Length: 308
Ligand SMILES: NC(=O)c1ccc[n+]([C@@H]2O[C@H](COP(=O)([O-])OP(=O)(O)OC[C@H]3O[C@@H](n4cnc5c(N)ncnc54)[C@H](O)[C@@H]3O)[C@@H](O)[C@H]2O)c1
Image 1 (cartoon, rainbow, N blue to C red):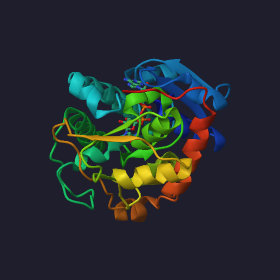
Image 2 (tube, protein in one colour):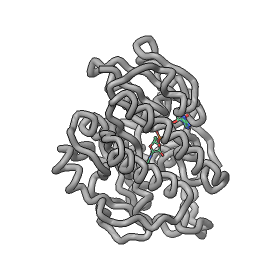
Image 3 (cartoon, rainbow, N blue to C red):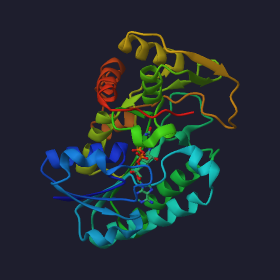
């Protein structure tokens, strides 16, 4: 089986590529290296094909059996700064969709729990998105286009709505990294952590290894549609900081400031029923275990990002 991972030099994409190699797939990665880093692929660099291109150039990699599409600008603030990224993400996605139709390959692509902003928890796939920011507009457009390609051309696809993914290899994302990485970095650097509001906002922390498992299950399933990839448990920022402090054995300096962001997400909390029933996916890694593993990785780096 030949697999292509767009955005495969990024945080999640590199973990997907590595698991695919370990499972015997022939793997090609296409990445613009915008937030990604080839260093993320060093363990498998001699076993994969890599090209530095935008995802729209996917056909340069020849025919594949399965595509994992992670390669878009990956964070809400990027789109706030440049809202033309919405058009770029969508037009590149159309190139990926056309490629998959032409080559009759299944598409598994990243979507986001940001789609649920404005809804009370738990968040299930039946909720009709009330788009509140440019990044979510791109994600929702991508979901609708995949469904349209399914109806018009029989495209086989799974769109996975990731919930707060954390783990190792986030250093090249810098200020766009998950809060777990950012808390660990502040702790290692002994610097002050800035928290928007009182820290009671909640996140459904999902370990990157579980996200990879969800991708593989989606690829192998005969299912089409949109699926949550979360744990079904959410923790407040204050609780997450306490978990990191416990793992590090030290207190982290904190400063709470008024939240400057409009349409900020207060809580994300996955309803996991559909992905459990249809894909057989359930998250396995407890936050304590995932935080310890990430901490061990970041402790070994020569330096961690010093952001803000
Ligand atoms: N990390 C999370 O919590 C989370 C949550 C929801 C959704 N997602 C989505 O998951 C995907 C992977 O995110 P990540 O956390 O690994 O971030 P990341 O920034 O590490 O990964 C994105 C990768 O795509 C590459 N890229 C960006 N634009 C590209 C383009 N046009 N063509 C080719 N490559 C391109 C980047 O260089 C990077 O390697 C993204 O689509 C992101 O929006 C992530």
